[in-house]
Each structure stands twice: as structure tokens, then as C-alpha cells.
Image: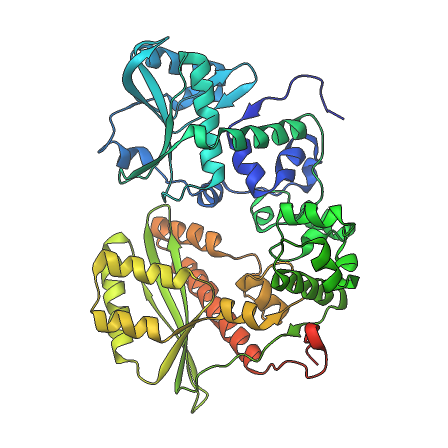
Length: 485
């Protein structure tokens, strides 16, 4: 099956790709390139949680030598340069590690006292990320680099680390995750050798250049992984009991499924069953009537952030006067990091003046940013409480109340299902970041208008979801399924 008989190399970033979508690696090697979409390098950094010019911020906390970027065009040359610096006991930024068919490019190698093949020092490995969230793909990449280090220096580091540009770091014990790492490595090696993974659709597939193929193939066989929030472990369990398609799951009796899946909560089985029925019929289900407070002002809130430069640059909101029906879009824009505190103060002033209101947002991000800005710039405790007591997460409300015939429940997926049309159908949060950076560079007003229009579309889509939910009620006669009539 291999396009070429040579041994495929195992690269560190394959662990990231595997956790986003196992097919990504397979398509990269064996797929038809005409189906591959180009992802701008900056967008890929955003997806990976990487920081731009992280070395500039890190240099205040770690002293290091940097491999000449030109050498990275030839990995063998870059590896030899890395080894020379390792022999000298230098800390190294953007290094290359190689051993047989393993190739890793860790962000930072740090020398520490101790005996090794290199002399009186050995190395540990760091990855530079925007957050210290220790996800499996980060841990497994770091373990991979550490195992290559062991081959080079004759000693395996006991810990590996994530560090941010501010110098904050968090580590973990490699031995605690080594077995899981090797299981994942073996799965990746099977893919490298030509074994195509079973069909599976997950949110991470959207970040790959091959999403169109992922969704087409999964839809083509109507695979059970089209069910929202189903995991690969869940998929395997259902396969084991003969449930491989959405139609099969929709037709299965939930009570019989519970007998075969005794360790699954019944609520989970019902949710999967109802999601399958919704996909099969193309109709929504409403399981309970969502309740919303009657207020004079409904505020729909959405934030645009650039994690690469650690700035929350746009606080946008749509204000609906329920008495008059008037709707107005407002926003506070930070021209740069220096203006972020001013934008925050203006938002707090606006919040202070709100009465008889409720703030709607979609998913957890707005609350997260609010808390981050409170920590960073402060806010009166009365306003913090006012915000927290008068906000409703419509994503949670939707999941608790309804089931839609969609594969994902993102704002874009749900809004599109409800026939809301974005001015730019390809726009997303990551694209907004690219536009913002372009605007800072060029100062073109047309670019900022695109950003504002996208943000306004997001809050208008949020309002459309709330309005739809407010009109729903459960069926009185459909039992477990609670089909919406």
C-alpha cells in the first residue's frame, strides 16, 4: 500500500496530528494532494497554541543559543549543529533531534548538571505554548523528544516541561505516561505503514487540510462516529455489539443497548440514540422547554482574542430592546495591547449602566476571558457579581434542551442549521486573528470592517439561537424521544 518502499520517518508533530484526526497522517502520505486545503502557517500556529517570536519573551527567563533558521532547511545539518551545541552544554532554542527514523524538533533543550554521554550535563526538553494546559498531544510529543534524547545522551530525563513566553512552566513525570505513549506511537506507526484508520469524525478534523475527505468518507459509510461527542472508545464499543452506522443506532432499542453496555449511564445511551434519530430523520428534538428571564434588554456578547499576542482585542455585543424591538450592535476595540485596559474599562462602564438585562453568550469562552481580564486589570466586586449573575450560556442551554441534526454544536454549525448566513461563510475566530494582525500592519479600515462584520454576525447568530430555543416545547406524546412537532 505504501507509495514508496522506504521506511517512513516518525516526526514529533505526528502526535499533534494524530490527536486532531488520525487520518491526517495517512492522507499526508497516501492521499491525493488535490483534495488538500492550504492552511496558512500563522493559522496553524494558532491551532497548535504556539506563540509567535516566543524566543524574545523566553530570553528574559532562559538563556539559550538558537539554531540558524537556514539550517532547518536541511534537517541533517540542523541536527549536527544541535549536537555540537549539546556537547558544549548550551541551552538550545529550535533544535533538531534525530535517531534512526525518529525526528523531533523541540522548542527548547535545557542543560542540567549530571553525567551523560555528553559529559557533566544532560538535557531536558521544553515546548513553548500560549497556555500551560497539559494536553495529551503535548505530553506525548515531549516524551518522544525525551526518548530521542535518551538515545543521544545515554540517559532518559525523568521530567519534561511546557513553558509560556512569560517564563511560567509546568512539568510532568515521563514514567507516568510512557505506556500510553507507546500505545499511541504503535498506532501512528501502523498508519505510517499504510494501515488506514477506521472512519471517525471529530471536531479536530476541522483543523486539518483534509476535512473535506474526512467528512465525505464518514458520511459515505454513515459511520456511528457522526454522533456528536462520541469518542473513539465509544465507537469501538458500539462496533463490538454490531452497531456501526447511525441508522443502526437509531433503530436500536435503548433498553437493549443498556443490557449490552452496562457501564454506560442510561442518559448517555438516550442522548446518543436521540442524536442518531435526529440525524436519520433530519428533524430536531426538544427534550425540555428552555426557560429564559423576561427582561427589558437582551445583550448578546462575543469576544475576539489573539492568543499569539495575548490580547483580547474586540468585545462585541448586540443589544435588543425587547419593549421597542430595536437592535443595536456595539463594540469596544483595542488598537493594540496598550489599549486593552482602556477597552476593558469602557466595557465595565457600560456594564455598570445596564439595568433589567441579561447577557447571552455561546459556550464558555466569554466567561473565561471576563475572569482573565478581571485578574489582569481588576474590576469592582459588584460588577463581577453583576456579570456572573446575569449571564446565560446558550450552548449549555441548547445541549440541555434540544438535539439537532448536526455533527457539531459550534456557533457556526448551529447558526447555519437555523439558516443564519455569515457575510463571509469561511470566516472564523482564527481568520479574525489573521485580519487583526493584517490591520495592525496596514491600518486599512476595510480590514477592521471585516472583523467587525464577522463579530456582528456571531452575536446575531447567538440571538437567532436564543429566539429559536424560546419558541420550542417538547412533544407531549413521543416518550423518550421527545420529538419536536
